[in-house]
Image (cartoon, rainbow, N blue to C red; front, side):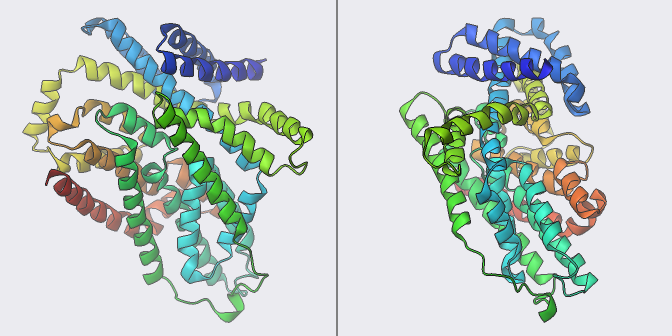
Amino acid sequence: MVKNISAACVAITIVFTLYHRFFGELAGLVVATSSLVVFLFLQWPKINNAGRILMGVAGVSLLFLGLSSDPLATLESALSRAIYFATFLLALAFLRVAAVHSHIVRQCGQLVVHQPPLRRYGIISFASYLFGTIINFGVVHLLGEMVARGNTLQSAGGLEHVQAIRRRRMNLAIMRGFSLVPLASPFSITMAVMLATIPGLDWFSLLPLGLLTAGLLLLLGWFLDYTTNPRQAPPSAQYSGPQLSWLPAVKFLLIVISFFSLAVLIERSTSANLPLSIVVASPVIGLAWLLLENPAGRSRKALTSSLQILRQQFPVEATATRSEIAILGAASIFGVIMAELLPHDVIVDSVNFLQLSGWILALVAGSVIILLAQFGINPIASAAIIAAALTPAESFGLQPQVLALGLMAGWSLAMNSSPVMITALLISSTTGTNPREITYRWNLLYNCVAFVVLAVWVFALDYILRT
Protein backbone atom coordinates (compact mmCIF):
# COMPACT_ATOMS: atom_id res chain seq x y z
CA MET A 1 0.00 0.00 0.00
CA VAL A 2 2.72 2.50 1.03
CA LYS A 3 4.75 1.59 -2.05
CA ASN A 4 1.82 2.18 -4.42
CA ILE A 5 0.77 5.46 -2.81
CA SER A 6 4.38 6.68 -2.82
CA ALA A 7 4.68 5.83 -6.51
CA ALA A 8 1.48 7.74 -7.25
CA CYS A 9 2.77 10.73 -5.27
CA VAL A 10 6.00 10.72 -7.28
CA ALA A 11 4.09 10.80 -10.57
CA ILE A 12 1.70 13.52 -9.36
CA THR A 13 4.58 15.66 -8.06
CA ILE A 14 6.43 15.51 -11.38
CA VAL A 15 3.39 16.17 -13.57
CA PHE A 16 1.98 19.06 -11.54
CA THR A 17 5.38 20.67 -10.98
CA LEU A 18 5.81 20.77 -14.76
CA TYR A 19 2.27 22.17 -15.06
CA HIS A 20 3.09 24.87 -12.52
CA ARG A 21 6.45 25.73 -14.12
CA PHE A 22 5.23 25.85 -17.71
CA PHE A 23 1.88 27.57 -17.15
CA GLY A 24 2.42 29.40 -13.86
CA GLU A 25 -0.78 27.98 -12.39
CA LEU A 26 -1.06 28.14 -8.60
CA ALA A 27 -3.19 24.97 -8.65
CA GLY A 28 -0.17 23.05 -9.95
CA LEU A 29 1.92 24.28 -7.02
CA VAL A 30 -0.76 23.30 -4.49
CA VAL A 31 -1.24 19.78 -5.89
CA ALA A 32 2.50 19.12 -6.32
CA THR A 33 3.28 20.38 -2.81
CA SER A 34 0.49 18.32 -1.25
CA SER A 35 1.64 15.22 -3.09
CA LEU A 36 5.26 15.77 -2.04
CA VAL A 37 4.24 16.21 1.61
CA VAL A 38 2.30 12.92 1.51
CA PHE A 39 5.31 11.22 -0.10
CA LEU A 40 7.69 12.47 2.60
CA PHE A 41 5.23 11.50 5.33
CA LEU A 42 5.03 7.94 3.98
CA GLN A 43 8.80 7.72 3.57
CA TRP A 44 9.57 9.32 6.97
CA PRO A 45 10.83 6.08 8.63
CA LYS A 46 13.45 5.67 5.88
CA ILE A 47 14.59 9.31 5.68
CA ASN A 48 18.01 9.80 7.28
CA ASN A 49 18.56 11.95 10.37
CA ALA A 50 19.86 14.94 8.42
CA GLY A 51 16.69 14.98 6.34
CA ARG A 52 14.44 14.73 9.38
CA ILE A 53 16.27 17.49 11.24
CA LEU A 54 16.16 19.85 8.27
CA MET A 55 12.46 19.14 7.72
CA GLY A 56 11.90 20.12 11.35
CA VAL A 57 13.94 23.30 10.87
CA ALA A 58 11.96 24.15 7.73
CA GLY A 59 8.71 23.56 9.59
CA VAL A 60 9.76 25.93 12.37
CA SER A 61 10.83 28.57 9.83
CA LEU A 62 7.30 28.52 8.39
CA LEU A 63 6.09 29.90 11.73
CA PHE A 64 8.02 33.11 11.01
CA LEU A 65 6.31 33.79 7.69
CA GLY A 66 4.13 36.39 9.38
CA LEU A 67 7.21 38.58 9.81
CA SER A 68 7.69 38.74 6.05
CA SER A 69 6.50 41.78 4.10
CA ASP A 70 4.47 39.47 1.84
CA PRO A 71 3.95 36.09 3.57
CA LEU A 72 1.99 34.46 0.73
CA ALA A 73 4.53 35.45 -1.93
CA THR A 74 7.39 34.20 0.25
CA LEU A 75 5.58 30.90 0.89
CA GLU A 76 4.86 30.46 -2.81
CA SER A 77 8.51 31.09 -3.69
CA ALA A 78 9.76 28.65 -1.04
CA LEU A 79 7.37 25.85 -2.00
CA SER A 80 7.92 26.40 -5.72
CA ARG A 81 11.67 25.96 -5.29
CA ALA A 82 11.21 22.88 -3.07
CA ILE A 83 8.99 21.00 -5.54
CA TYR A 84 11.22 22.08 -8.42
CA PHE A 85 14.32 20.51 -6.86
CA ALA A 86 12.37 17.43 -5.79
CA THR A 87 11.08 16.92 -9.32
CA PHE A 88 14.59 17.29 -10.74
CA LEU A 89 15.88 14.53 -8.44
CA LEU A 90 12.89 12.28 -9.12
CA ALA A 91 13.05 12.61 -12.90
CA LEU A 92 16.67 11.46 -13.09
CA ALA A 93 15.50 8.09 -11.77
CA PHE A 94 14.37 7.29 -15.34
CA LEU A 95 18.04 7.31 -16.37
CA ARG A 96 19.14 5.24 -13.40
CA VAL A 97 16.61 2.53 -14.25
CA ALA A 98 18.06 2.27 -17.75
CA ALA A 99 21.63 2.28 -16.41
CA VAL A 100 20.92 -0.52 -13.94
CA HIS A 101 19.76 -2.74 -16.84
CA SER A 102 22.53 -1.62 -19.20
CA HIS A 103 25.10 -4.03 -20.62
CA ILE A 104 26.95 -0.97 -21.94
CA VAL A 105 27.57 0.32 -18.41
CA ARG A 106 28.88 -3.04 -17.20
CA GLN A 107 31.15 -3.42 -20.24
CA CYS A 108 32.49 0.10 -19.68
CA GLY A 109 33.21 -0.77 -16.06
CA GLN A 110 35.25 -3.81 -17.08
CA LEU A 111 37.11 -1.74 -19.65
CA VAL A 112 38.20 1.06 -17.33
CA VAL A 113 39.52 -1.14 -14.50
CA HIS A 114 41.69 -3.22 -16.85
CA GLN A 115 43.98 -0.43 -18.01
CA PRO A 116 47.76 -0.11 -17.59
CA PRO A 117 48.87 1.95 -14.55
CA LEU A 118 49.81 5.06 -16.54
CA ARG A 119 46.33 5.36 -18.07
CA ARG A 120 44.29 3.69 -15.36
CA TYR A 121 43.83 6.65 -12.99
CA GLY A 122 42.76 9.11 -15.68
CA ILE A 123 40.38 6.69 -17.37
CA ILE A 124 38.77 5.49 -14.13
CA SER A 125 38.46 9.05 -12.83
CA PHE A 126 36.87 10.31 -16.05
CA ALA A 127 34.59 7.26 -16.22
CA SER A 128 33.50 7.84 -12.62
CA TYR A 129 32.60 11.43 -13.51
CA LEU A 130 30.86 10.50 -16.75
CA PHE A 131 28.86 7.60 -15.27
CA GLY A 132 28.10 9.74 -12.23
CA THR A 133 26.31 12.29 -14.40
CA ILE A 134 23.69 9.61 -15.09
CA ILE A 135 23.67 7.06 -12.27
CA ASN A 136 24.79 9.31 -9.40
CA PHE A 137 26.17 7.41 -6.38
CA GLY A 138 25.52 4.15 -8.19
CA VAL A 139 28.78 4.62 -10.08
CA VAL A 140 30.80 4.41 -6.84
CA HIS A 141 29.24 1.04 -6.06
CA LEU A 142 29.45 -0.17 -9.69
CA LEU A 143 33.12 0.65 -10.26
CA GLY A 144 34.03 -0.18 -6.67
CA GLU A 145 32.64 -3.69 -7.01
CA MET A 146 34.42 -4.15 -10.34
CA VAL A 147 37.70 -3.01 -8.80
CA ALA A 148 37.19 -5.44 -5.90
CA ARG A 149 36.44 -8.33 -8.28
CA GLY A 150 39.24 -7.51 -10.72
CA ASN A 151 41.95 -6.66 -8.20
CA THR A 152 42.60 -10.21 -7.02
CA LEU A 153 45.83 -11.43 -5.49
CA GLN A 154 46.35 -13.56 -8.60
CA SER A 155 46.01 -10.54 -10.91
CA ALA A 156 48.60 -8.77 -8.73
CA GLY A 157 51.08 -11.58 -9.35
CA GLY A 158 50.65 -12.91 -5.82
CA LEU A 159 52.09 -9.67 -4.42
CA GLU A 160 49.93 -8.31 -1.59
CA HIS A 161 51.56 -4.87 -1.60
CA VAL A 162 50.78 -4.49 -5.32
CA GLN A 163 47.17 -5.49 -4.66
CA ALA A 164 46.92 -2.92 -1.82
CA ILE A 165 48.45 -0.14 -3.93
CA ARG A 166 46.06 -0.88 -6.80
CA ARG A 167 43.10 -0.92 -4.43
CA ARG A 168 44.02 2.51 -3.06
CA ARG A 169 44.82 4.08 -6.44
CA MET A 170 41.72 2.84 -8.24
CA ASN A 171 39.33 3.70 -5.43
CA LEU A 172 40.79 7.20 -5.09
CA ALA A 173 40.30 7.61 -8.85
CA ILE A 174 36.64 6.62 -8.43
CA MET A 175 36.15 8.97 -5.49
CA ARG A 176 37.88 11.97 -7.04
CA GLY A 177 36.22 11.43 -10.40
CA PHE A 178 32.74 11.25 -8.93
CA SER A 179 33.39 14.40 -6.90
CA LEU A 180 33.71 16.30 -10.20
CA VAL A 181 29.98 15.83 -10.87
CA PRO A 182 28.93 18.92 -8.82
CA LEU A 183 31.35 21.00 -10.89
CA ALA A 184 30.83 19.73 -14.39
CA SER A 185 27.54 17.90 -14.85
CA PRO A 186 24.59 19.72 -16.42
CA PHE A 187 22.40 16.96 -14.93
CA SER A 188 23.56 17.46 -11.33
CA ILE A 189 21.38 18.94 -8.61
CA THR A 190 24.29 21.31 -7.94
CA MET A 191 23.79 23.01 -11.29
CA ALA A 192 20.04 23.21 -10.71
CA VAL A 193 20.55 24.78 -7.26
CA MET A 194 23.02 27.38 -8.55
CA LEU A 195 20.87 28.38 -11.52
CA ALA A 196 17.70 28.62 -9.43
CA THR A 197 19.24 30.44 -6.47
CA ILE A 198 21.79 32.90 -7.88
CA PRO A 199 20.26 35.67 -10.04
CA GLY A 200 22.06 36.57 -13.25
CA LEU A 201 23.50 33.10 -13.75
CA ASP A 202 23.02 31.01 -16.90
CA TRP A 203 24.20 27.51 -17.74
CA PHE A 204 26.16 28.43 -20.89
CA SER A 205 28.48 30.67 -18.87
CA LEU A 206 28.66 28.44 -15.77
CA LEU A 207 29.01 24.98 -17.32
CA PRO A 208 32.21 25.73 -19.32
CA LEU A 209 33.82 27.15 -16.17
CA GLY A 210 32.79 24.05 -14.24
CA LEU A 211 34.16 21.77 -16.96
CA LEU A 212 37.46 23.66 -16.99
CA THR A 213 37.71 23.47 -13.19
CA ALA A 214 36.92 19.75 -13.26
CA GLY A 215 39.60 19.28 -15.91
CA LEU A 216 42.16 21.00 -13.68
CA LEU A 217 41.27 18.75 -10.74
CA LEU A 218 41.31 15.60 -12.86
CA LEU A 219 44.80 16.46 -14.17
CA LEU A 220 45.94 17.31 -10.64
CA GLY A 221 44.78 13.95 -9.34
CA TRP A 222 46.39 12.16 -12.28
CA PHE A 223 49.68 14.00 -11.66
CA LEU A 224 49.69 13.17 -7.95
CA ASP A 225 48.84 9.53 -8.69
CA TYR A 226 51.73 9.34 -11.16
CA THR A 227 54.31 11.02 -8.92
CA THR A 228 53.46 9.25 -5.66
CA ASN A 229 53.14 5.66 -6.92
CA PRO A 230 55.29 3.08 -8.74
CA ARG A 231 55.61 3.74 -12.47
CA GLN A 232 55.27 0.13 -13.62
CA ALA A 233 53.75 -3.03 -12.17
CA PRO A 234 55.93 -6.15 -11.97
CA PRO A 235 55.59 -8.35 -15.11
CA SER A 236 53.68 -11.00 -13.15
CA ALA A 237 51.08 -8.39 -12.10
CA GLN A 238 50.38 -6.90 -15.54
CA TYR A 239 47.02 -7.49 -17.25
CA SER A 240 47.27 -10.30 -19.79
CA GLY A 241 43.62 -10.87 -20.64
CA PRO A 242 41.88 -10.32 -23.99
CA GLN A 243 41.91 -6.92 -25.67
CA LEU A 244 38.77 -5.04 -24.58
CA SER A 245 36.75 -2.95 -27.04
CA TRP A 246 36.22 0.79 -26.57
CA LEU A 247 32.88 0.60 -28.43
CA PRO A 248 30.76 0.44 -25.21
CA ALA A 249 32.47 3.63 -23.98
CA VAL A 250 31.64 5.38 -27.26
CA LYS A 251 28.02 4.23 -26.99
CA PHE A 252 27.71 5.52 -23.42
CA LEU A 253 29.23 8.86 -24.39
CA LEU A 254 26.71 9.15 -27.23
CA ILE A 255 23.87 8.49 -24.77
CA VAL A 256 25.10 11.33 -22.52
CA ILE A 257 25.51 13.68 -25.50
CA SER A 258 22.04 12.77 -26.80
CA PHE A 259 20.52 13.47 -23.39
CA PHE A 260 22.18 16.86 -23.12
CA SER A 261 21.36 17.75 -26.74
CA LEU A 262 17.68 16.93 -26.29
CA ALA A 263 17.56 19.00 -23.09
CA VAL A 264 19.17 21.98 -24.87
CA LEU A 265 16.73 21.60 -27.77
CA ILE A 266 13.78 21.67 -25.36
CA GLU A 267 15.24 24.71 -23.60
CA ARG A 268 15.71 26.57 -26.89
CA SER A 269 12.22 25.80 -28.18
CA THR A 270 10.18 26.31 -24.99
CA SER A 271 10.07 28.62 -21.98
CA ALA A 272 11.82 26.02 -19.81
CA ASN A 273 15.31 26.53 -18.40
CA LEU A 274 17.95 23.79 -18.69
CA PRO A 275 17.17 21.89 -15.43
CA LEU A 276 13.46 21.83 -16.27
CA SER A 277 14.31 20.68 -19.81
CA ILE A 278 16.35 17.85 -18.28
CA VAL A 279 13.26 16.80 -16.31
CA VAL A 280 11.26 16.62 -19.55
CA ALA A 281 14.02 14.80 -21.45
CA SER A 282 14.73 12.19 -18.76
CA PRO A 283 11.83 9.77 -19.43
CA VAL A 284 12.38 10.04 -23.19
CA ILE A 285 16.07 9.16 -22.99
CA GLY A 286 15.45 6.54 -20.30
CA LEU A 287 12.94 4.71 -22.50
CA ALA A 288 15.09 5.10 -25.63
CA TRP A 289 18.09 3.65 -23.76
CA LEU A 290 16.09 0.62 -22.62
CA LEU A 291 14.86 0.09 -26.19
CA LEU A 292 18.41 0.41 -27.53
CA GLU A 293 19.62 -2.50 -25.40
CA ASN A 294 16.45 -4.59 -25.45
CA PRO A 295 17.20 -8.06 -26.88
CA ALA A 296 13.85 -8.01 -28.70
CA GLY A 297 15.14 -5.22 -30.95
CA ARG A 298 12.81 -2.62 -32.45
CA SER A 299 9.56 -4.47 -31.95
CA ARG A 300 6.31 -4.00 -30.10
CA LYS A 301 7.52 -6.62 -27.63
CA ALA A 302 10.62 -4.51 -26.91
CA LEU A 303 8.50 -1.43 -26.28
CA THR A 304 6.15 -3.35 -24.00
CA SER A 305 8.94 -4.91 -21.95
CA SER A 306 10.82 -1.59 -21.68
CA LEU A 307 7.72 0.19 -20.43
CA GLN A 308 7.18 -2.65 -17.97
CA ILE A 309 10.71 -2.20 -16.61
CA LEU A 310 10.09 1.52 -16.13
CA ARG A 311 6.73 0.87 -14.49
CA GLN A 312 8.26 -1.57 -12.01
CA GLN A 313 11.66 -0.01 -11.34
CA PHE A 314 11.10 3.75 -11.61
CA PRO A 315 9.18 4.01 -8.30
CA VAL A 316 11.97 2.06 -6.58
CA GLU A 317 14.73 4.32 -7.93
CA ALA A 318 12.70 7.48 -7.32
CA THR A 319 11.79 6.71 -3.72
CA ALA A 320 15.46 5.91 -3.02
CA THR A 321 16.13 9.67 -3.27
CA ARG A 322 13.80 10.35 -0.32
CA SER A 323 16.54 11.69 1.97
CA GLU A 324 18.05 13.95 -0.70
CA ILE A 325 14.58 15.31 -1.48
CA ALA A 326 13.91 15.96 2.20
CA ILE A 327 17.27 17.69 2.70
CA LEU A 328 17.14 19.86 -0.41
CA GLY A 329 13.45 20.69 -0.15
CA ALA A 330 13.75 21.68 3.50
CA ALA A 331 16.95 23.66 2.89
CA SER A 332 15.25 25.50 0.03
CA ILE A 333 12.28 26.48 2.18
CA PHE A 334 14.52 27.56 5.06
CA GLY A 335 16.86 29.47 2.73
CA VAL A 336 14.10 31.41 0.99
CA ILE A 337 12.37 32.36 4.25
CA MET A 338 15.59 33.39 6.02
CA ALA A 339 16.75 35.40 3.00
CA GLU A 340 13.43 37.24 3.11
CA LEU A 341 13.43 37.84 6.87
CA LEU A 342 17.08 38.86 7.31
CA PRO A 343 17.61 42.43 6.09
CA HIS A 344 19.93 42.29 3.09
CA ASP A 345 21.80 45.37 4.25
CA VAL A 346 22.65 43.65 7.53
CA ILE A 347 24.16 40.67 5.70
CA VAL A 348 26.17 42.95 3.40
CA ASP A 349 27.42 45.09 6.30
CA SER A 350 28.39 42.01 8.30
CA VAL A 351 30.35 40.56 5.38
CA ASN A 352 32.06 43.90 4.74
CA PHE A 353 32.94 44.21 8.45
CA LEU A 354 34.71 40.85 8.22
CA GLN A 355 36.42 42.05 5.02
CA LEU A 356 35.21 39.03 3.09
CA SER A 357 33.91 40.66 -0.06
CA GLY A 358 34.89 39.59 -3.57
CA TRP A 359 36.63 36.36 -4.46
CA ILE A 360 37.69 35.80 -0.84
CA LEU A 361 34.01 35.54 0.12
CA ALA A 362 33.45 32.90 -2.58
CA LEU A 363 36.40 30.93 -1.24
CA VAL A 364 35.22 31.26 2.37
CA ALA A 365 31.70 30.19 1.37
CA GLY A 366 33.12 27.06 -0.25
CA SER A 367 35.29 26.43 2.82
CA VAL A 368 32.22 26.59 5.07
CA ILE A 369 30.61 23.85 2.97
CA ILE A 370 33.75 21.71 3.39
CA LEU A 371 33.89 22.35 7.14
CA LEU A 372 30.21 21.59 7.73
CA ALA A 373 30.52 18.38 5.73
CA GLN A 374 33.04 17.06 8.28
CA PHE A 375 30.18 17.08 10.82
CA GLY A 376 27.70 15.41 8.49
CA ILE A 377 25.97 18.54 7.13
CA ASN A 378 25.14 17.63 3.54
CA PRO A 379 26.49 20.09 0.92
CA ILE A 380 23.03 20.05 -0.65
CA ALA A 381 21.71 21.92 2.38
CA SER A 382 24.66 24.21 3.11
CA ALA A 383 25.15 25.27 -0.52
CA ALA A 384 21.45 26.04 -1.00
CA ILE A 385 21.27 28.15 2.17
CA ILE A 386 24.55 30.02 1.57
CA ALA A 387 23.63 30.74 -2.05
CA ALA A 388 20.27 32.16 -0.97
CA ALA A 389 21.93 34.36 1.67
CA LEU A 390 24.60 35.79 -0.66
CA THR A 391 22.34 37.06 -3.43
CA PRO A 392 22.48 39.20 -5.39
CA ALA A 393 26.17 38.41 -5.66
CA GLU A 394 27.03 41.86 -7.01
CA SER A 395 26.16 43.48 -3.68
CA PHE A 396 29.05 41.53 -2.14
CA GLY A 397 31.52 42.57 -4.83
CA LEU A 398 31.12 39.21 -6.55
CA GLN A 399 30.36 38.06 -10.06
CA PRO A 400 27.58 35.41 -10.02
CA GLN A 401 29.88 32.92 -11.78
CA VAL A 402 32.59 33.35 -9.12
CA LEU A 403 30.13 32.78 -6.26
CA ALA A 404 28.68 29.71 -7.96
CA LEU A 405 32.11 28.28 -8.72
CA GLY A 406 33.25 28.81 -5.13
CA LEU A 407 30.21 26.92 -3.82
CA MET A 408 30.53 24.15 -6.41
CA ALA A 409 34.24 23.73 -5.66
CA GLY A 410 33.48 23.53 -1.94
CA TRP A 411 30.80 20.92 -2.66
CA SER A 412 33.33 18.89 -4.68
CA LEU A 413 36.04 18.98 -2.00
CA ALA A 414 33.48 18.18 0.71
CA MET A 415 32.75 14.91 -1.09
CA ASN A 416 36.49 14.17 -1.14
CA SER A 417 37.32 15.13 2.42
CA SER A 418 34.41 14.15 4.68
CA PRO A 419 34.45 10.65 6.19
CA VAL A 420 30.69 10.81 6.76
CA MET A 421 29.69 11.62 3.18
CA ILE A 422 28.12 8.79 1.20
CA THR A 423 31.08 8.68 -1.22
CA ALA A 424 33.59 7.78 1.50
CA LEU A 425 31.15 5.33 3.09
CA LEU A 426 30.61 3.49 -0.20
CA ILE A 427 34.35 3.32 -0.88
CA SER A 428 34.81 2.06 2.68
CA SER A 429 32.26 -0.72 2.18
CA THR A 430 33.96 -2.03 -0.98
CA THR A 431 37.54 -1.78 0.33
CA GLY A 432 37.01 -2.67 3.98
CA THR A 433 38.95 0.47 4.91
CA ASN A 434 37.91 2.95 7.60
CA PRO A 435 36.41 6.07 5.92
CA ARG A 436 38.68 8.31 8.00
CA GLU A 437 41.66 6.45 6.61
CA ILE A 438 40.37 7.11 3.10
CA THR A 439 39.65 10.82 3.51
CA TYR A 440 42.20 11.95 6.09
CA ARG A 441 45.18 9.84 4.95
CA TRP A 442 44.75 8.47 1.43
CA ASN A 443 43.23 11.69 0.10
CA LEU A 444 44.85 14.32 2.35
CA LEU A 445 47.56 15.48 -0.08
CA TYR A 446 45.09 15.78 -2.96
CA ASN A 447 42.60 17.76 -0.87
CA CYS A 448 45.24 20.21 0.36
CA VAL A 449 46.78 20.81 -3.06
CA ALA A 450 43.35 20.98 -4.72
CA PHE A 451 42.24 23.66 -2.26
CA VAL A 452 45.27 25.81 -3.12
CA VAL A 453 44.75 25.28 -6.86
CA LEU A 454 41.06 26.20 -6.56
CA ALA A 455 41.89 29.32 -4.52
CA VAL A 456 44.28 30.52 -7.23
CA TRP A 457 41.73 29.64 -9.93
CA VAL A 458 38.88 31.50 -8.19
CA PHE A 459 41.13 34.55 -7.77
CA ALA A 460 42.18 34.41 -11.44
CA LEU A 461 38.59 34.00 -12.62
CA ASP A 462 37.44 36.95 -10.53
CA TYR A 463 40.26 39.08 -11.97
CA ILE A 464 39.45 38.04 -15.55
CA LEU A 465 35.72 38.76 -15.19
CA ARG A 466 36.42 42.17 -13.68
CA THR A 467 38.80 43.31 -16.44
